[in-house]
Length: 381
Ligand code: PEP
Ligand code: MN
Image (tube, rainbow, N blue to C red; front, side, top):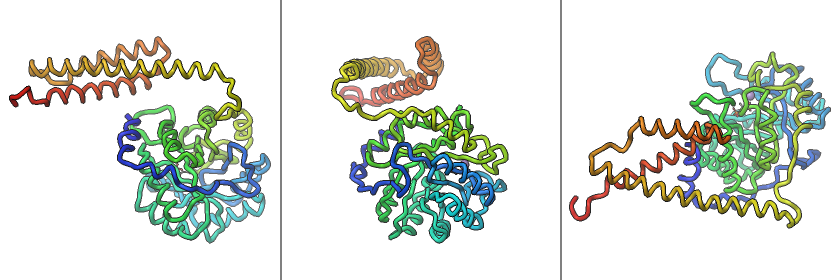
């Protein structure tokens, strides 16, 4: 279960990262109202595609243009970006619209070329932030350069690796940093292209409270039909910005065609977002306080129940040990999960939730039983 990736490792890390003194991720002429939008095509395909897309985005008040110059692709042979040849097109976008430009850098050469071409914001892609050597080299190449960097989560759900990448830039003196949440690869078949695994960015924010958080709905969704719900959810989780793919003609895009949307459709999507504030401005929210008190009480009961359940599991462990029975009976586990999935469905609890909870409870139960099994009997081993 992914949540264990967050909590188990955390204990070994001191909480120094929360003290990072970040500079604001704000720009002249870019409104600091939430959400800050970075939009543009997955890939730079031609000067015309870039300038036309940017012109339509700028007309909606979007101030920051994104485009992939170097594209990391899973298999060779697919379009890997035009590389440096596309950098002058970014300049054309700036000249035509006054927008700031952002692109992905994955090695030191990309950094030098992007800086030389006057790119304003860099992002580190998910396939790069997964590799501390690559991240360190890029961070070192940026020593002494005052450029904002958005660091996307690594492809795998490893919070420490994400924080580590942020720290590598910070220690190299890059302090205008933001985090980009683009979801995590999964071997399971998902509705979305990448599992959002929301608890990981939520925990990142708890650990580094002042880091601006951007959602990348395009790479989470993989399909434009889900972009609205992911953007809304990110706003309800107090994200600061959205980095989203937009193309004048998405269906003929050379990469990520299904997840891109036209500037006009992006405008509709953004107009539908409901923005709520993180904290209430008055203290009279008695109802909220009362409901929270109820939640706290229920959580107390949940933890008590879990304790009781594990005590019973330990007795089962003793019984199995005395009768020389193995800890796991697959058919019993199958019955438990099937029954709870059925019950959960009746009670409006999603299958994914029930599975996650019960897998975790079962794992903990196995641990308790294993402990009992391996305990030496009083006095005789
Ligand atoms: C992208 O933004 O075009 C991209 C390749 O993103 P990611 O690193 O999230 O896959
Ligand atoms: Mn893309």
